[in-house]
Length: 138
Image 1 (cartoon, rainbow, N blue to C red):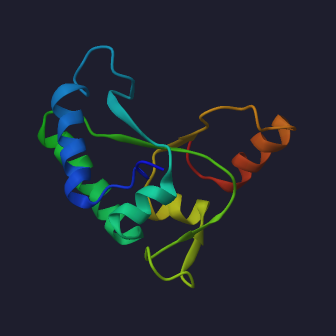
Image 2 (cartoon, helix red, strand yellow; image 1 turned 90 degrees about the vertical axis):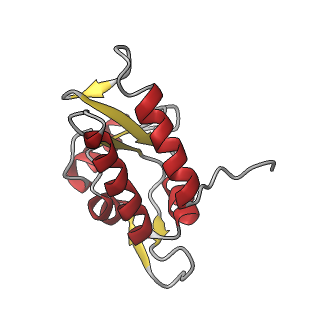
C-alpha cells in the first residue's frame, strides 16, 4: 500500500477549503436542494484519520459552516453505504463501537447512496433493509 488515504484535521481542512474555493460553486457541480454534495466513500478511514467520531463530527460541522461562510446555502453530506459493520467510536478503543445507523445519526449525514450495486444478490431485500434501518433519504 502506498497511501491509506486517511487524513488528519489539518489535511481535511486543506481539502475542504480547496473544494469550496474551486469546485462547489461551479455550475456543473452536483447539488441537492442547492447545496453541494460531499460524499464520504470510506467512513472508517475518515474516522480513523480524524481521530474518532467526535473529531469527525466537529470536522464536518466546521466544513458545513465554511460552506455557508463562502456564500453557499449549506453542504449536503452523503454517506456511501458499504457492508453492515461496527465502527470504532474513539479511533483507538475497540470496546466503544456503534452501528452504521448510529454513526449516520451521530455525524448528521443528509442522505445515503451506494457506489455500485454489483454485490447485491437480492436488491429488493437491500432496499427493504435500508428503508427500515435509516431515517434519511437514499
